[in-house]
Image (tube, rainbow, N blue to C red; front, side, top):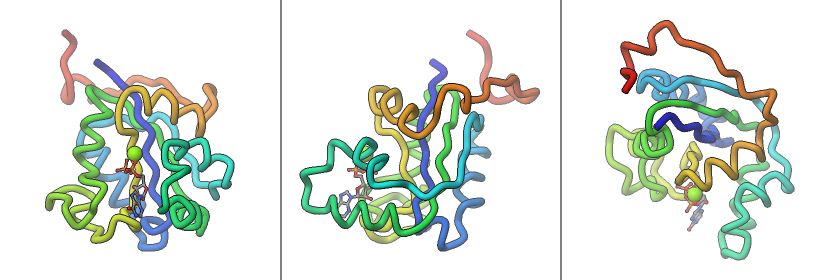
Length: 152
Ligand code: IDP
Ligand code: MG
């Protein structure tokens, strides 16, 4: 079950110099980077990305947080990648995220939780095209693949 998932290093992760730290955790896990861009998210891209949250009380604060500076948007691919990335990221409530996760090691508050990862297959399929066009997703072979997964 090879999947692709959308990951964002949010503006707090960029400002705090944690881009490399975040990328490194997905790389070391064995995931494969298939797309990446450094960009200022617009309100319209965020309205699509966070459409499930538009009517929540925290939405205006969420938009000002995500538009406050550049983000790194990425697509990572791998075996069971959506769940693997969510577990690597840790709980939305960063203060409850287990040590060893990105949020559990590097964040303390839900409103500044460093990273986004698609929650499930539906969200991944919906979110990736919001941030990337098809021709920005790069398919390639890794020489190390058989040291990370094995063919069924
Ligand atoms: P997720 O990022 O772990 O998938 P969601 O519940 O989908 O969590 O919420 C999206 C983002 O909205 C969170 O990562 C966080 O940045 C923000 N958020 C969610 N709930 C709150 C809240 O109660 N206060 C402030 N920000 C929140
Ligand atoms: Mg979510």
